[in-house]
Length: 243
Image (cartoon, rainbow, N blue to C red; front, top):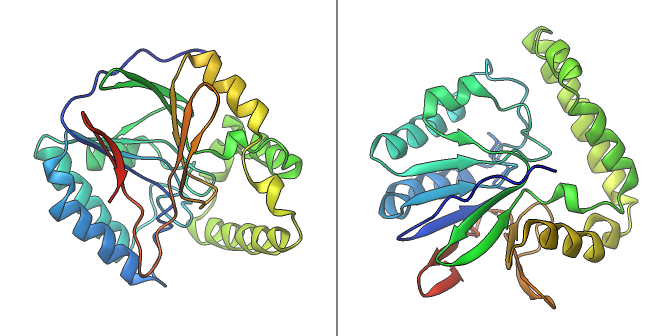
């Protein structure tokens, strides 16, 4: 696995994940827009660690919600605040066109950065849940570039129907999965963090906001966004906190 070069941060950094933006929950979109207007402009950078949208079937998809989100991101990046994105299991097809239109930078699945002297590994988190064997098999399939290339050339309406069926099946499968296999595998996670030489790990995906003090590193889990709660991690020279 190739280790990405350090990005040395300064000032204040925000991390968010698992907003699952969709038309059926406009309150969450409002939370995001408020965050982008009130908190994000004060930061050095903002990192979005996947499942930003409830699902993403191609950069040619259009809606009022997507326009709102694009405008908010573009306003932020134009003002000089850097915005980075790591794909999740719902929006791994978000691509270059979206990045160009908003000014965000798309990062690889694992990315190492220096947060005020702390080597910090960031990722969405789904790659750490190796006990969910069926999901990992599905992930390997849908991340094949040739398959993505073919899918993105299907008519938009057909892609929407396919995505809806996949999402419905995923919800059904989750009801029958033990909760522990949908969390990170501790040994594999520790091995991954060690391989990158990190002392902090920040990820989302599991929707279980928490701070875990492991033997050799600290694991910070971002929560998902709800109608009445937005999980935002702030990291600065004094340390970190959920705000």
